[in-house]
Length: 302
Image (tube, rainbow, N blue to C red; front, side, top):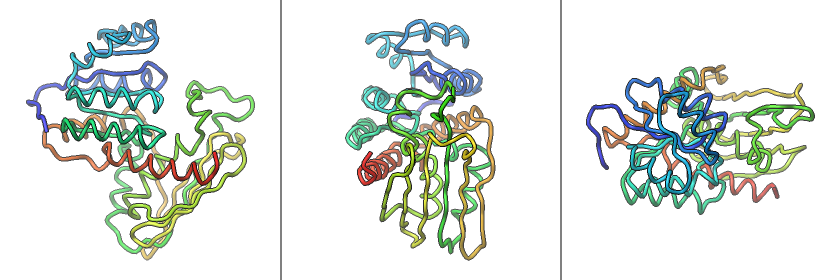
């Protein structure tokens, strides 16, 4: 794998939507080990505005994406998954390290292409599953993963992003099209898999609105149940992940500071680049998430 000297890493940002504006760009611009090398966007005016806000250069158009790659050591993505995947494969093919949003793609073929490009050039990668990097939850996951004897788990991630009358800047078209399974499913799986083991059996069924219910078996022998939704009534909103086993009951703690979590993901990428050690939440793990979610989608008939 290509390594870098202990100097600031040049990271370019691809995307100009609300996550890019509110989380990725501020985290990258303020990180002491990073130079924000530029912003590329599909909308030139948005790219120019975001770049100006953080004192960097705007890139646009087909030529602009290649120019941003050339000016960067790594690329952070804040795009819909099926726009992200081919651009991420393209970046990896040029030797750029990858800081990807979840899910990597919503097709197995798309995610595999990113993995193939990353493996061919040996670049480092991190997939930003928030709970794996937020200070409160990352520590909790590590603590539970170190314990044996988990029997079962219950996870519910229920949002009202698309409830009647709801307005939210994160209510993008891809989330409306793909629902809670693809948007928040990666978060839940990124908690359950490191604690209970990989999924060996999956059953999925539809509920009201975009709700998907999952029953999972894990390599540890434990089972888990998962409910995912973005179109629930406002009064039904909530996020809970609870483990039960020989150690008793453990509940996922509350978390905050998405910008801080993204900064930790940047730290993880820098560490992986400089040591050559792959991160557990890398593009290969991202592919595994896509495989599981695609199977769930197929079973649920979405």
